[in-house]
Image (cartoon, rainbow, N blue to C red):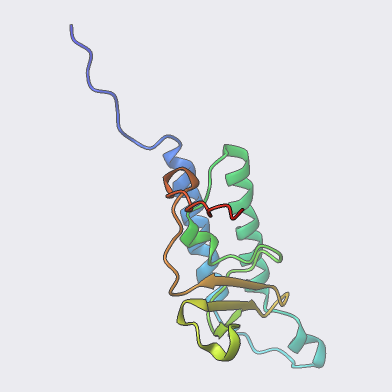
Length: 150
């Protein structure tokens, strides 16, 4: 009997599904406003709602599953998570986004950076906006050698 074709499925699919579910649940909880009426004191205004703490716990679970199974979360998922405080970054609720151009007078359009600032821990992430993605080192063309003046 001939061998059948090997399965072309993703190994550890259940772990990817678990990480995806945890991310969806954390995003849902972080986007919820606290609907319960509570006394507003200065301490309550500074503390995040309880659902945000649960969302942070779920994000810690995402990192734990990834580490144990040696699975990398997708770059898109990693961009929505704060590396320092494990909170989900939702624009306007848990983070502030802006575009900066640190070039002299903002003249270089390729120097635009998307700046994402976490409200919880004040951590900053920077992403290039218009710059083309750099090729891997082996695929790059070598730089032209300068002629030795002598």
